[in-house]
Image (cartoon, rainbow, N blue to C red; front, side, top):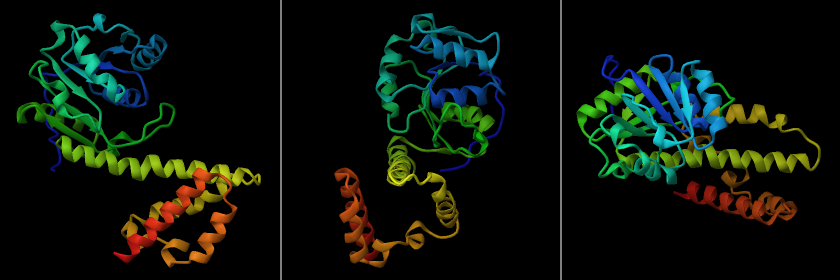
Length: 268
């Protein structure tokens, strides 16, 4: 994987965004600093209107793909299972433009039979509409139908990010799986921790210094080297005591499985 080109091309100037969710919102706002965002398309008209108005007063919006306007590029940022449907319903007059989707797990093959200029534009980050982030620090992984198309996509990606890499569909799927472990599952564990503390009216804030230090530590040593706690020590007595007081069966099963995984990992 190599860093993307920062050369500015002029063939893509007008971009339409299909989607108005978390990812679409951040990408649309970032791209609007460098390109003309001409239209937002979302099945929820209120979401389309809200995002369009944050872009500029001239950005059009609609809830109908049949009303898709002419643009140099189209960025699809919708649920994975909706990407193929968007492509099926896209007006034929728009299919000669550059088309990209933002999914980590949907392969480039979803574009089979659809035009000739397409690719994947995958930003590796957790996005929430109302939580600001520095998109320049967000890695973007691209895969184009041809090397020339990927170079064109890299120019767009490099306009908003300092970290642009190539990743084919198989590599991108692996990255996405890792991201689910590192972000989505970890955040769910935060939720379990919050629920556990709330039973005794203890605020989640007491864990924030611990969480910050855990993240800081893995910037200095490997995650395996940073591992601490009763499972890392092989302290089955403490583990059994914890399991005995966890009254939620699912939480108890998660605690047990993760403890076993940590102990197994330490044996390798």
